[in-house]
Image (cartoon, rainbow, N blue to C red; front, top):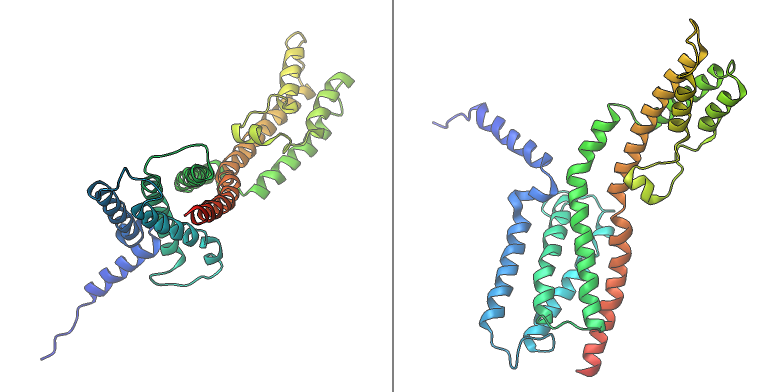
Length: 296
């Protein structure tokens, strides 16, 4: 008699499937590409110490050419990730699998590329290619760290508010400040006006990444108004109370928005290094290969 399968195994299988669907690219297929990259690195290290090259290991030996060919082919394949992102396909070569392979095989180039040089580095195009490769890899490592940690900080900072909603809240506060500042004396109104006129997105890249805005007109206006009020008698219905409250709300909203822009910049800044340095690496690698075969 044929047995009837219970629904429990199907439930567990579905649970495992959901887990696989939600696993990150670093953990893809139980770290399959990490294991492949480790095996590749170990094989290169073992062969490097077992194979005797006279007078010593260098990029111009047969073993150096072998590692160089492997490294060059890997670099060319790794640069295809940008094109691969345009094709969304499931399975063993899904975008997640490709990205996982990109990360771990890219890291393996530290071993492969360095062993290819035989630790003979100098002021030449060959070392330039190796140095650019290391810059690309290091920027990629930062990119992995950024995408693994910063999105959670970005979500926590937003507190269920989108960037558009934060900007709209800022504009609403500006309109309220404009109306609340009408009863103020000209000197005090000018301070509020300076806050209204300053571009909240002003500042260069380093200020945005560091989240430091020493010339913040909102913060300065609030400090100056509080300083001037310290020597004035408090009235029952003082318009400065409302202005001060609105400036405090605006400063808090500005702080959240600027923190949001800081995290976004930190998520993107590595690409401004990683992508151009990849093209520079391809150029230096081409020069390296041509010069090797020209002198070979």
